[in-house]
Image 1 (cartoon, rainbow, N blue to C red):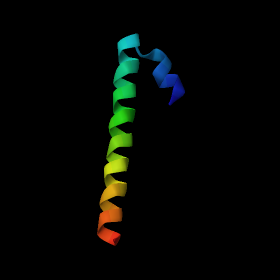
Image 2: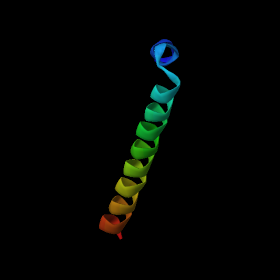
Image 3: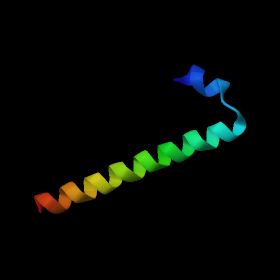
Length: 39
């Protein structure tokens, strides 16, 4: 994982960061959904 990141251009790093943020947001949305279903 780290090795593939090293080969990316500086702009590629921001794309990686964007994907991380999307995943984090999706995880939060999922958790909120589960809480609403369980309550």
